[in-house]
Image (tube, rainbow, N blue to C red):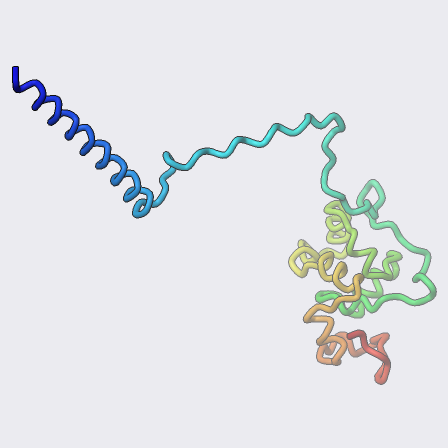
Length: 178
């Protein structure tokens, strides 16, 4: 029975060695190991938003600038007696500009709000077969209506586009937009 105190002493020394090993392992692990998904606590989910009572609206749509059949709404004449130079839109030459003016379309902002139905109507009227979309008239007109320039309109302003020189409403020496 003299071995029992020795066994208790050995057991206590093993327990102390085990605990010291655990502490050393814990600190070494924290220093050298990157936190894993298991060790990083999950953030609490945000509370669910209150239910929306009002119906969800679509993004702000362009105003419908057409008749029910798609024909663009016409102006009786240019606003303030001054029309925009529609030839600054790539694909619009003097002949097409005259045709658009006869339809009552004088300004970039009129073209910039064309709906799909209106584009189709004008496309059919001019026998273009998709040319308005290919040449991106609506996008160009939107930029020009805001006072921005397009690469094509810059070329027109410089006189580098022959179809825009004949009958061009911009006279030499007039101020150009910058």
